[in-house]
Image (cartoon, rainbow, N blue to C red; front, top):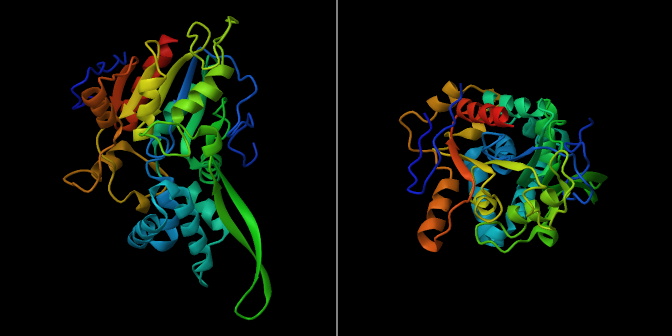
Length: 348
């Protein structure tokens, strides 16, 4: 069963009787054009939701190892500050390429290949595919990751065309840099940078990173441009006209996923919040995972940290008296998520 330790009211589980571009609608970071009309819009976080790891930590760890990646990230964050997370990740990726050795190369292609092999739960992919087959539903990713890692993963796993309403995330960029090598030869190297969305989605929520507030993404990009099938009534700029906009099903695990749950989702919407603990040593996994294998990594282990979204909602209630207006369902395993998603599809 699905279990939650929250003191706030959580609905019981529903009875379950193109190219390398990851954004076919070409709206990564920009959804100014009208999007397809749907009755239900599924919005997915990426890290620890679609993939069963943190992509920013997973990719460099494939070249540096877990311990060294964690050590360097700590040092970089101490130097630059926690608000410069993506600068720290970029620095780490570039260090991987600069320190590349014969027999252990790290090129642009190797980086993308590592991202393509990130672990995911089989039934999470199954849930995404179930939604993709329903013509009354659409899907989008809202992530504080970057489109290089996300795009490589989606393409490798045949998911790149499932996100009809695009991907809102930060931009990963490869830039050419010419310099002299140790032999004095002029060489051209790829340099990785992440371009933040801070100018567009800087946000004002303390639970969100400074460069991407997910409530802003919903209010300013996705909801104003997505209508319910067959309904052309006026829509407020922030998507607040719920007669016009589709039902939202939001799937996520993190602190920044609590923000739209508290500030945007309403009585017609659903939050599928990941509960429980992360698997231990996620950066040693690759590709598809069955629930039984993933859960074996948690058996008798205190290593995995807890997914923070439900504790963030609990704190919001205790400290500010805020509770989500939407229905809230907890899930941990892929099977639990897919069961919930299929039941919600039956409601459409």
